[in-house]
Image (cartoon, rainbow, N blue to C red):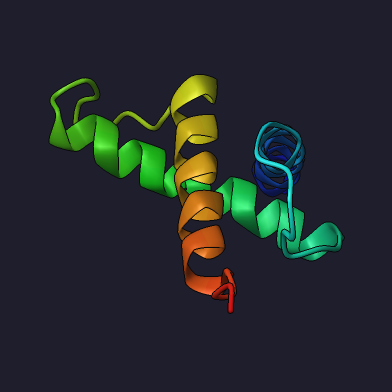
Length: 85
């Protein structure tokens, strides 16, 4: 139970910091921010394991989670930007 609360809390913190670093038209709301942080952590873990920084049983640290969340927001911005006419 406490593990789930910890994941949500860290996801919220990482999501808020990522939105602060990469401002703009971001998906809003508490749930979207938490999901950006949590999925960013999974992405950071995947990237870290791919480059050999983390072992098979390790998860991403705070900075890799933040990097993953920033990558997600950057992809979101690329997909949703409108063309200038």
